[in-house]
Amino acid sequence: MAERPQRRTPRATSATVARTERLTPHMVRVVLAVDPAAALEIGACTDHYVKLLFPPGGGSLAQAYGAPYVEPLDVEAIRRDHPREQWPRTRTYTVRAWDEASREMSVDFVVHGDEGIAGPWAARVRPGEEIWFMGPGGGYAPDAAADWHLLAGDESALPAVAAAVERLPAGAHARVFLEVGGPAEEQKLHTEGDAEIVWLHRGDRPVGEALVEAVSGLEFPPGDVQVFVHGEAHFVKELRRLLRVDRAVPRERLSVSGYWRRGADEDGWQSSKREWNARIEAEQESGPEA
Image (cartoon, rainbow, N blue to C red; front, side, top):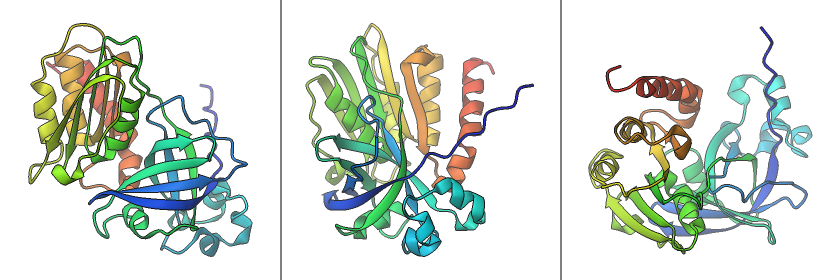
C-alpha cells in the first residue's frame, strides 16, 4: 500500500485590525488589513474561510512563542517544537468580504458574552491589534447554470449565505432561509437575484428546528437545484437526509456541512467532524431502510 503524502500545515498570514462594527446585538464585524506581501486566492468561492490563530491562555502570539515564531509565524514549527497544550487555538470563520485593492478582509463573529474564544476577542479588539490566520479555503459559489438555488443556515452560516446571495446572477431564482435568535438579529441582504429571503426567529426553540420545518415544507420548484446548507451539525444532518433521500438531490449539487455541533467546542468538533460526516453520509446514501 502506498503511503499517504504528509499534509503540510499552511503558512500563517498576519493581519492588523482596521476597524470593527456592531452589526446586530450578537454579530460583530472585524475588518482586517492583510499583509500586502501575502498572496491570497480569494474570490472564486462565496464560502471562503480562514482559520484564526489564538495563543493558548490569552495574550499575544509573540508572548506565547517568542520572536523566532513571529516573523513569519511558522505553525508547523510550533506544533513540532511545543507540546499540544501550547499550540495556537484555531477558530474557523467565513470571509464575509474581500477588497483586493485595499487588502481588507471582513470577518463576522457571533458574540454571546464571554462564551468561547473568538467571539469575546471580536467584541473587545481594537484597531491596530495583530492577528494571524491560515487559509483561505472554500469550495462553493452559486452556479449560474442552476434553475434555482436553495440556501439555509443559522447565524454561523449567515456570512456565507449573505456572500452567496450577493453573488447570485441577475434574475437567478433562490429560496433563502436564515434562522436567528430574533428580529434584532436580521441583516439587510443585497442581491441582483430573484431571491425570496425568509428570516426564522428561533426564540426558545432548539437551534435549527425552525429551519428543518421550513425546508421540509417547501414546495420545490421544477428543475436543477443547487443547495447550500450549513450550520449546527444536528439540523444539517436532518436536512441532508431530506435533500438526498426524500428529494433525491444529486450529491454534486449539495454543499452541506456542519459548521459546529451542540455540546462541543471547535477543537472537539474538528477532531470528530470527518468521522461524523462520513458516518452520516454512509447511513443516508444507503437509503431510508438502512
